[in-house]
Structure formats: structure tokens, C-alpha cells
Length: 185
Image 1: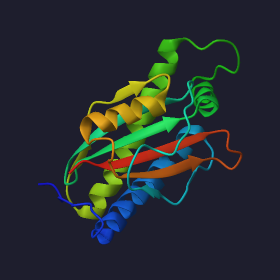
Image 2: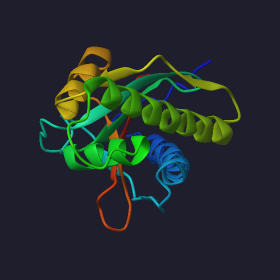
Image 3: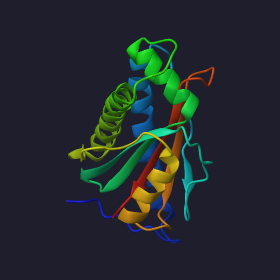
């Protein structure tokens, strides 16, 4: 059964609760991300975007993985890695420091990291609610991830969907990305 939160101008409490869920998910995802890359990754305070598309600028080299969450809270989770961070992440995971990366290697690495992070987001939210929450099979964007995520959200919820965005980054800003949480019910 879904939590069933109604988001409108009178639902500040619901928005705060959703931001709390997104923050808990991002904190747990940041810890997992840090374990994957062997560095401390910080999750920043969530930003609530109440209408219109994400404020993020387009990056044709950005990659991302998008999931629908099902169970105690229906939502979309998008994990986007800007181009430079995506390249650094893949190279770190596969141990290839220079040269061209094959598309299949990039796809596999981004998909694997996305799966791990989304599972941690779902787990953190489910733990807070005390019920089951599972991510769907992922959708992968190997280029223009912000544009792909916006299209994914628009198809599922509409262009005016509430978004909660949380940045993830190491101290140098070389590894990271951001997590977008969008309630769908």
C-alpha cells in the first residue's frame, strides 16, 4: 500500500517528509558510493524544486540511471553523473586510466553503480517507513542524462512534477553527481 502523499501549496508537511526521505536515501547512497570509489562522498542538503524541470544545466556527456520505486512509496529516483565525473567514476571502477573507454564498459559500470545506489536509496526510505520498497529495472542514459531524466519524469508524472535534488561529491569535486527523487503518487 502506498503512503499516498498529496503535494499542493497546503502540503508543506508532506514536502518536508519527502525531503527527509530523499535526504536519508541520499546519505545512505553517498556512503555506498564512497565504498565503491574508496573515498568519502558527501550528500548535500536536498533542494526542493516544486514545479518545472530540474535546474541542472544540460551536459551532453552526462550519464545516468533512472528507476521507479514500488511499494510503500511510489517514486522515481534518477542518479546523474556529469560528464567529467562519469568518466572519472568509470575509470576508477574498471582501472583504465587513459585512452578511449568502450561504450559497453561505460554502460556496465554506470548501470552497476546506479543499481547499488538506487538500492541504498530504496532501503533507507523503506527503513524509515517500516515497509517494503523496491527499485524497478533501470533505464540507462549514456549521454544527455539530464534531458533523458526530464523526459522520463514527464512521461511518468508530468512536466510540473515535484523534484527533490541532492548533490553527491567527494571533497575535490571530481567524483560525484546528483540524485533526483520524484514522488509519483
